[in-house]
Length: 476
Image 1: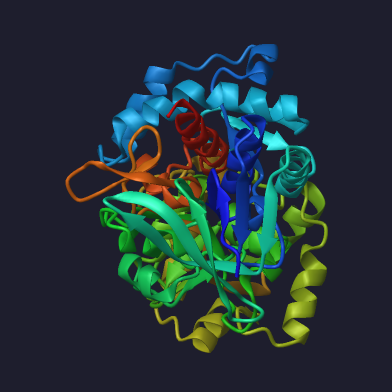
Image 2: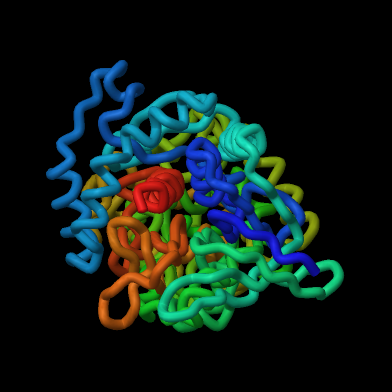
């Protein structure tokens, strides 16, 4: 078979790969994008928005952010496991990345905070899928070639310099070699790789909501080529999530019952029926995920009065980290009725607290409810310090318990890169022509907990790192 020569081969057609493809096309690089799936966009189809600091939209709204203050905050958050130089480089160019996306035709619905965070997220009009469509079309218009159902197998190199890439056709099983001096890995991280995930979080209660293709291909290719085995970094937890191992987790992304159980979070108890955390931890979805995983099981407890309030009056607190962000949960009663009728195992109802405790074998639940209601009546949480305005009693039956797992959108880390997004070897030197971007490189931004204090950071980094790597290739 004829071997084609390219200036650049990009592995992965998600948000980072597409951003790199557009940048490469604009510099007239002969570029090929390989996508192992049948469709384009990857997890980029599902992101809400992208981080930017000092963007055109923030200037329009008078939003000013001190980049050094953000840098210090995020380094503190990561316990200085994040790479300060790389993080600073990202922040310094994040605003211009948003402006670049805007000039390409990506539309933004607004900019601001998400929960208790910096006001950095630029929400995509039409969601991530709309942004992906703009980037794909722009790349094609610039002459970038795309091949789908093609999975990269190994990188060819001599004297620590990339020479090409071997890929397999997922339909025929046949291999093909593509010649190039530059390979850019953009495969989306490793959330769908059970072995790597078990090294990071040894729990059966993770509910992955990624596109299913993030199996650590970029890590394996980079390691094969001599890249340094860096820390596996952090999962991007989506906080509490309805625990149903029988169905794909994405089916509950829009669940109002899920929003009531996780975002409203009236009372969380463990496998003994004991309260174990200030439920306001859900303001930081990754901290919430960490907290849930400290227990063997977790149930969200609430009563009929809460259901009525959420349906007719409104939310107890703004839903900051959920796709469900209405003023009221109007569909909550019918969801509960349907789930009970179909005997969903994650939802349990009882006329009394004692009955609920007996059904779930939560021996300490009655005493926990009694103690919690006393705190609500007193208006102060002397146990865990929950904000008084969110203290909500559990008194009026029927009573409900929703079993929670932890949602996970991405897992990032495993590869160390320099400020040009070049893969570094064990001695800290770059492997010629090998670049990693997006989630495959985003471990440089975090410690052991993803920083939801900077909403939009992975999507923003995807576009930034794609451009950043290609700009270095052009400079070379």
